[in-house]
Image 1 (cartoon, rainbow, N blue to C red):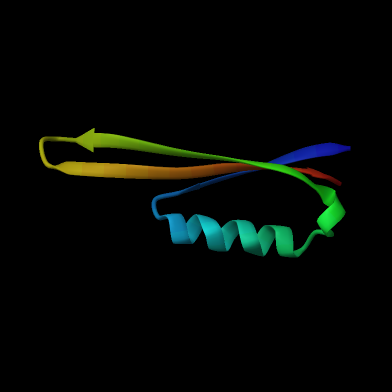
Image 2 (image 1 turned 135 degrees about the horizontal axis):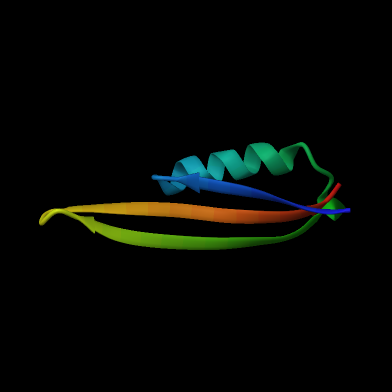
Length: 60
């Protein structure tokens, strides 16, 4: 059965670590695809917030 796992982090290294930890528990043939996205938001006048997200599609 096809499943998805969503990840959302403020730092790209955190996202990388979370995904690597998750897929480390899977066999390589179980991972179907990984979709990656970055969003940048301006908060107030001088602060920019980044959101790094990914969706891992895998077979359970």
